[in-house]
Length: 335
Image 1 (cartoon, one colour):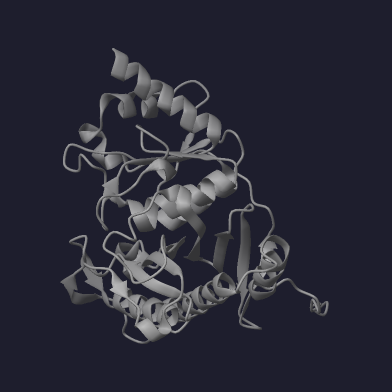
Image 2 (image 1 turned 135 degrees about the vertical axis):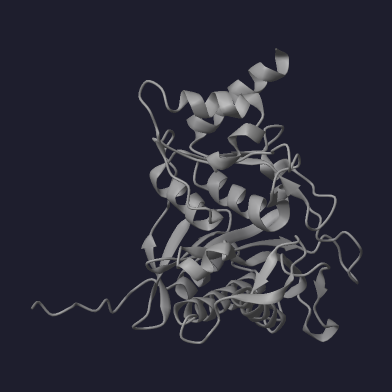
C-alpha cells in the first residue's frame, strides 16, 4: 500500500484568514481574524458533538421551543452554548443574535469588540436523529456607531455584511467562508484538527440542472412558483433534489449549480427562513460566488429587517436559473 503523503505546507483556515488580513486590511486591528478563529473553533466543537451524538445520548428533544417556535433538540442547545461562549471570549464581538434566543445577547462590556454576529448554531436540526447532513450558518456585521449599543443595532442591510459563512457536518466537515473577496471552502482534517483549504475560489455556474424545493407544499404555492417548477419537469427536465437541511441544499447548489427555493406559502405568507442568520449569509456567499439570491421582490441583501427573527421567501443559485424564475414571477404580477 502506498504511503500517504503529508503536506508540510498546507493552507489552513487560520493561515488563510491571516493572509487575507495582510492583503486586504494590512493596518487592521486583527479583530475580524480573531472572530473568525473563534467561529472555526465553535464549528470544530459542534462537529465533534455531532459525530458522537448517539453515543453521548445527545439525540432527542430538549423539551422546549426556540424563538421561531420550533422544538429544540439537545444538540441545538449544546451548539448554541458553544457558539455563544466562543464568541463572548473572542473579545471581538459586542452583540450576538441566535436563532435559539428570543432577544439579542449583549456581550459583557469588558469583553466587547466592534462586531455583531448573527448565527443559526445548528440548522436542519429536524434531521439530527436520522443522521442527515446538518450545519451552522453565520454572518458578521460591524457595530454601526461608536459608544454604547443601541436598540436596532443588529437590524442592518445585508449589504453591510463584513463576512459570512457556514459549516456543513456531512460525510466530512467543511467550512465555506467569504470576507467579501470570493468564496473558499475548507475541509476539516481530523488527523491534525485543522480546516484545510480544499475548494479555492468557489463559483456557482451560470446555469445548473437541479431544482430544490419542498414539493409537499405545492398546493400552497403562488401560481408563479407552480408554473416555474412545472416548466423544470418538461422538455430537457431538471433533476429534483431536496434534503430539507438548508446548509446541505445550498452547498449542493453552490457546487453543482441550479436553484434552491423556499417560497412563501398560504400558511407562511412571509416565508419560513429567517433573514438575519439564514437568508442573508447564504445570499452573501451565493453573490460572492457569482450567483443570485432574491426574495421575489428584491435581492435578499437589499433587505433591512425590522425584527430579529423576521422571515422571508428566498430563491438562490445559478444566475440564469434565478433570473428565469424572476421572469415568471414578474409575468404573473403584470397579468
